[in-house]
Length: 442
Ligand SMILES: *Cc1c(COP(=O)(O)O)cnc(C)c1O
Image 1 (cartoon, rainbow, N blue to C red):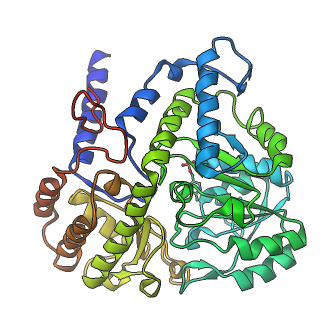
Image 2 (cartoon, helix red, strand yellow; image 1 turned 135 degrees about the vertical axis):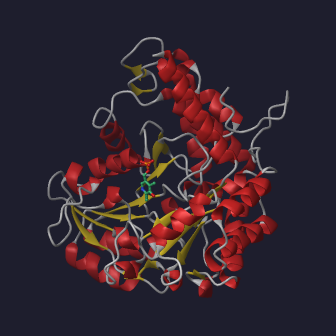
Image 3 (cartoon, helix red, strand yellow; image 1 turned 180 degrees about the vertical axis):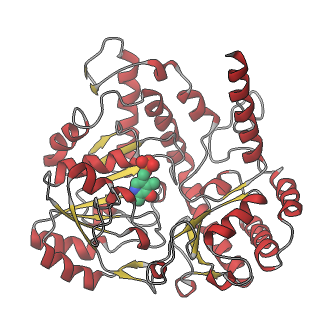
């Protein structure tokens, strides 16, 4: 068995080397600081503490309680809210807390975004309108019926006017804003008024944009009408993989709490609560600079790619107001292929992005395995200290690979040379003893 352990170790090391030499552009990813990693590796990872602070099911929780309380307080400070539950173990779990609290079980009704237009599988019904099973979380776990909000493809956003009609007719119990493709703030304010008319709650899934919101960019859903917000802690917020729920509705706190525990999980990954607390402290200190730079980098990368022949969506709106860009790659269909093919070529050169369905892909009969789009995020490269000039370098790599069809193996070497200078996590308190390299396992 020891050879298996050696093998696991060596594969992990190879993965680390790959990431060290890569340009990481997956919009849902980020990296944690050494201080977050240390908290996540602590003894908390071995312990159980079901329940709320001060009301645990287990003994031995004295210090766990202190840290979880700090984590809740830091969350409330960062998001300026009265309730924070830092126990959901992921963003999907946090969404389920909202479904449990704000909709009825079996045949409850929710309006949300469809997947080809940026919605997430956790917002989706159990089957499509044609009856094809897709096992979306909202339908499969909560039995929700979903009616999709209207979408404006030109502006890559929810169409508020047409969605208002849909909401008035469908009378959902909850409207869920937020998405996985999320370039511009959603019309929460406008549609919250319509939600009130029909007695619907307003939920907001900030999985992608939680960091941008906490640092005061993008939009402020709790003050625009959202009753509760669910999010992942590891996308624009650079914490460990975990989830959280926040709200400003005092009257909903008890319901939101029991909708998490005991409804959804027993223990809640205490090491990640500790790591999340550290990440929040970092963002309260450095988030204003960090998140501003993420958005500037996304806009600069959008411009640089656009100038090199890439159809980055929404040029008329400055490409994005978040950490993301979406590229319609179909002008390269004849010369190279679609999203899946291009994802592979970029990966061969160690540029890691993901293919992405575009709204028109369904009409064109394209499959998610090889769709017409790419999605790019700047959270991680920004955390490694990259700025506008590096965005131009990255766009040049795209040009060499996709436009000029240079050999990915050759570009891979150039990518790795370029990456050498970006091996330290920024926007965090730097350990004073020695310069840290990120992802140091051994
Ligand atoms: C990533 C994402 C989630 C899921 O988050 P996990 O933490 O992976 O469970 C939920 N909603 C949206 C919109 C997302 O993009």
